[in-house]
Image (cartoon, rainbow, N blue to C red):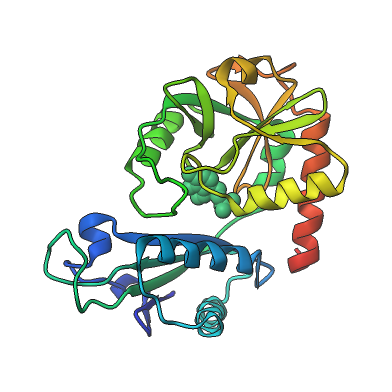
Length: 284
Ligand code: PLP
C-alpha cells in the first residue's frame, strides 16, 4: 500500500504531513473522493473542475498541471493494483508557523491515498433501499466548497450510524432538506425529481450532476428547488447519490416510510441509467 505525499510515493503506514500543515490546524484544505472502477477513473474531469474551483475561491495557488495531477493519480492507482477503489486527494494551503492569515511562502501540500472499495455492495442496498434520519444543518455557509472542515458532517453521520440509518439528512432552520452528510438528496413526486438547487448550502455533487443529466436526457422532469421534510415524507419516492453510493432509494426518514416504504420505479429507472453510465465510462 503506497500513498502520495507531496511528490513522493511512500508506504501508507509512513505517510505523514507536517504538524503545522494548515489542513491539520485550520482545515484550510480542499479534498476530492473519486471512484476507481475496473482500474479506471470515473468522472475525473468533474472532480478536477471542482478542485480547481475550490482553489480559486480560497486563493490556494496550486501550480500542478491537469496532466501532471492525472498522471500522479493514475500512477498511485496502478502501483496499488486495485481494480475498485476510492482515490482520496487532499490539497492544503501548505505548512507554515500557525497564523490565521495566509502564509507568505507556503506551497500547497497534496496528498493522495487509494483504498479498495466494494461498489457491488451498493447493488443489494439499492434493491432493499436505505433509511435516513434528519439532523439540524449546523455547517458553515460555504459548503459548496469541498473543504476538510467536516465536523458537522461527521456528527450527522455518527448520529445516523447510531440510529441504524445509512445517512443523516441535514435540515435548515426553515425546514428545508439540503443534502446528506456525504450525499445529495432528492424526492420524487408524480414522476418529477426534486432536489435542492446549487447554492452555498449544498455541495455540487459529481454524482448529482450525472444523475440530473441522465434524467433530463431520458425526458424525466427535474426541478431544482428546496423541498421540506414534510414534502419528503409525503413524496412518492426519495433517493440519494454520491461517488461512493451512485444511487440509493431512501425508503424511510426518521423511521417513517416514504411512499409505500419500498424502492420505487423512478429510483429503479434512474439506477439503471446511472449504472449504464458507469459501465460506459469504466467497463464496470
Ligand atoms: N454532499 C456532501 C456534503 C458530500 O460530502 C458529498 C461527497 O462526499 C456529496 C454531497 C456527494 O458528492 P459527490 O457526488 O461528488 O461524491
